[in-house]
Length: 89
Image 1 (cartoon, rainbow, N blue to C red):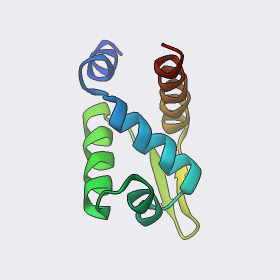
Image 2: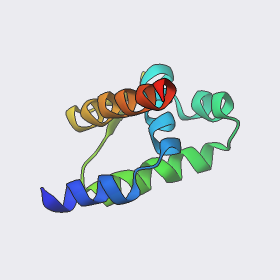
Image 3: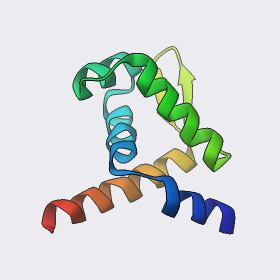
């Protein structure tokens, strides 16, 4: 658990949080890429790097799009909270 905590503190950036939230809301890499004005490979790469670094799957890929796992839901909830605090500040 300490390794996971360290990874989140050291590597999770606001841009990652924006991507996670957008993936939760839009459910498709292509739509997220268009929404954030980046390429699809950039979104896929970021998600893969996060999952690899955390050692957990954040989203399940399905025909209906991306569905957050319980780990993804937790990280999305944290991301929403952190970005809301940034807005307040």
